[in-house]
Image 1 (spheres, one colour):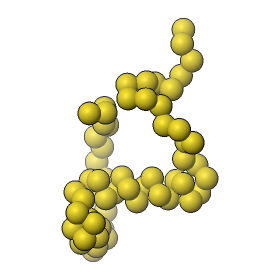
Image 2 (cartoon, rainbow, N blue to C red; image 1 turned 30 degrees about the vertical axis):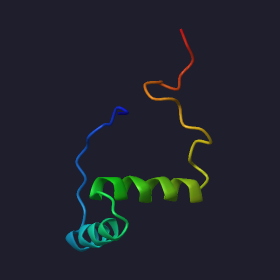
Image 3 (cartoon, helix red, strand yellow; image 1 turned 60 degrees about the horizontal axis):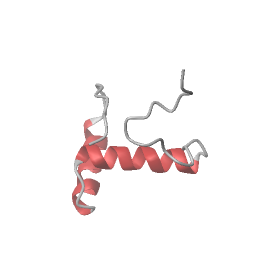
Image 4 (cartoon, rainbow, N blue to C red; image 1 turned 180 degrees about the horizontal axis):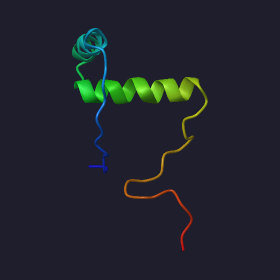
Length: 63
C-alpha cells in the first residue's frame, strides 16, 4: 500500500454528509471519495501530474 499522510480536515457537517452519501452510492469509503474528488478537481484545473511517481518514490532528483 502506498504511503499516506494523515491530516485533520474541518468540514461543514452538511458537506460531510453529502460526501458520505456520494461515497455510498459509488461504493467507496468516505476517505476514498474525498481523494477522488480532490484528484478530479486537480485534473480539471490542469494541476495534476501527468504520471504519478511509482510507490515509494519521492519524485525528486537522485543525489
